[in-house]
Image 1 (cartoon, helix red, strand yellow):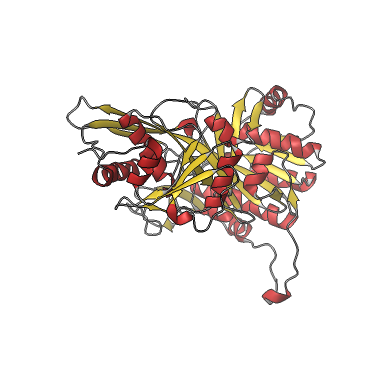
Image 2: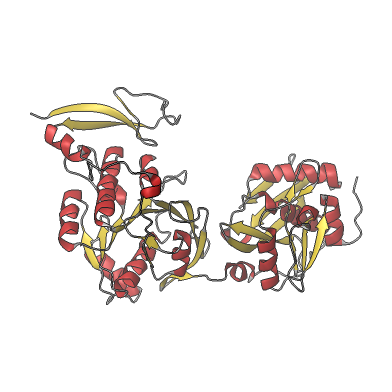
Length: 462
């Protein structure tokens, strides 16, 4: 007879223990253990722990045949770019994002495009009915595309339907709603998410099916469920953005078949997700010309160079302590740059409120944006606008020096393509790059020298 037992499972990494612990000894997170009731039945244990492909022999790495992974194009160039050229047969991809950000809309478009290309696509929905999916497909103009819809969240029923239909592509929306009846945990629990994903992974690897999983995110921004879920899949993509901005960013943080930290940009419209093939133009389209407090920086997102508008506002404070607020820039990094500007460039900001924003909802984490942030702050403080056709890039050190940036030539080419005429660049990059024709590059060694190039005669304030 089956015997019920209770164990505690970490919601972050899946570590199991017989008693509750405040801190997980595996991942170090606090208050993540959940009580899970399990059934110790021999037949259930055999079903969940069987290993497909048993009896394989060890091979010398040199004797393994070279076979390129076949890729399936999704019909959406930005998504194919993030995936490294398309979805690989037999791979499993996890797409995470906040509710309402557009995950289901994007995957509905993917289903329609791949079905029109001749692939058999099965869209499994554990959250919506078949009628709701049809309404979305009709709104997007994809009603006659020919992909199959299965409103089901019982993994045993899904397993049998996949065997009967034998699709080329499976989309599971979402993995947190799937469950196995043999397990006592509710859908979304650690054990249910782990075993449901493991079943789909076995189908992907044994039958060569391309599987897309949709995952909800927690309030901290990570995908809900055990951390092992991200280790099981071949690619992890995050949808970023919110209702305040029209743009959505699809970022790869893990990809076994392509580059990580790749980025694709979409615009949410009434007809679905529209690709933004020229993000630099979109991000600079509404930039205010002739106004102080604005500097253009060329950022690298994976292999893509993007021109972004760095905005700053400096005003005399009316409070005892000046305010420091930032959006799209780490606040600690901004405080460090403000201290460097005061000490090394003689710009007093101790009695000023400073606000920094990256337009378009973008986030800049690379140090190459340091000099542009400093330039935007200095421009607002002095009320002197920076020339609209000048871009600024460089890492700023604590001594006020401007350090070289990576991929400088690719950044310069993007600036030239967008019609910029001048770039303020670290002098260390001038030895190894060749400026495009028509682009003047000004090398600087310090923050003070950069301000002289941008604002003309520079006078240190005491």
